[in-house]
Length: 612
Ligand code: MG
Ligand code: MG
View 1 (cartoon, rainbow, N blue to C red):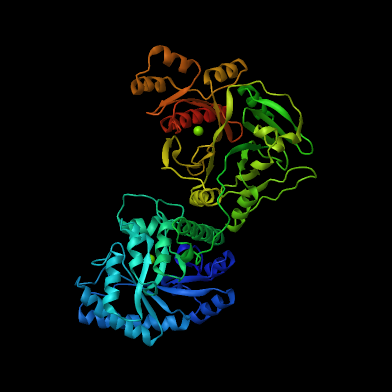
View 2: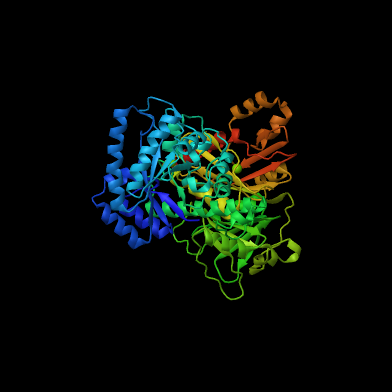
């Protein structure tokens, strides 16, 4: 279907917004009236610019506080409307959004509202304009789309229909299924926004916290299936009021927005196909199948000098597996945990988490999907005889490589690319099983975009977000994971101007053995304060012997109804550190209560090292 976006979603001047929407690949835009009022371009110039860019102007919005008013107010409202319709004629826009009255309505009578909308319909028709009536979630009398449709139905005018906005419907908890009872040709416009689950008045929630589809708590794919089943074939348009997106780069946000619509159409088409609605689903554009990753192939740390990281890997019990045949890249591993150390194009860079390699069932399909979502590819220079892994850049800058499981050798024990490394020694460590998760951090302005990247490109799920208090600010965390847990990536929003450590968590089967060996080899630890162990005693009723063992090895602990969890952290090298963890039973989370202890301890280490 046609893809559109309200100019209010973006930063910049109206002209900037038009250019960015066209560059991103939108078909059309909604003109948000305040954006027109502040520009020094005439409506004719905006229309000409849109024409030149190949953008249609799909909607003029909003027209407020029209219906349910006293007769003298109605005459003034019709005067206002006439002036707007003149502007719309100059712009060449034929649909106006009329949202339900918030301020001036004196009656909740559906008949009065319908009669007044009929008068508006007459006026609109004389300008060739259609009125799309929208129930705002905070409308004075009309705050439910089923009621706005009832009023539009009573108005019984060919120029009067409804605008359905997912925010106003889903924020009120209204069932969107009744959309299918509205004739498709009376749905004049559809606006789409997701939102996080918040306990907040709907007006503040709407004005500041809307998200692009796929980033919040709602099932927008399901919402679109109702529109399509109703017979709606107009634009799918994004209307996302969000404080962050209104200040991020215009072009980047427009691309981000388009990615969410591409994802959304595909998701809705798949839902319809599953329900045997494939025929109506043909109206929707599909992209290549989601190929949920099966697990981590490797994690890549990049630095001018990775020597310090190698010391830590050796202390943790990983083995040096070899040097790459043609590049300054080295491989360390234990079990299925493979750490690639890359000194290529890394001048002046301190150690940081640069990439992850994920196994997928069909790398070609997964790459097609990423390309359809307009994700930036990693430029690769491969030498003859080397595997060409497709790589994509996540919004935080992390490079995500996809390795086709079908190219595996050695009966799935090791990916084929591992054979490109020579002159190492085989590993002996049995306790380290693989990579449990990686923990990346980015600024507040990249977070929602990153969530969409992992849901749309890789089909990862997003369990409830958490937050942890650190000495320099609150750290918001969103884990993105596969259903099986084979891939988990924790996305952290670091406090302003704080370099939050990224970490690589290694899963092991005997944390005491790993800790003892690391101690024997001289690995320093992030020290855990005694108060923490007193707290553990209070929370879990652990006995002295158990607490003594945890304290001896500076381990942290957690327990849930499903099982137990032990872990420790290494001090960071550059901006990266390692976590070693052991899960038993069905323990499937991340000991969130321990995160503030880690953040405070890391902060003490950082201060001590600054003091020298
Ligand atoms: Mg709206
Ligand atoms: Mg962790």
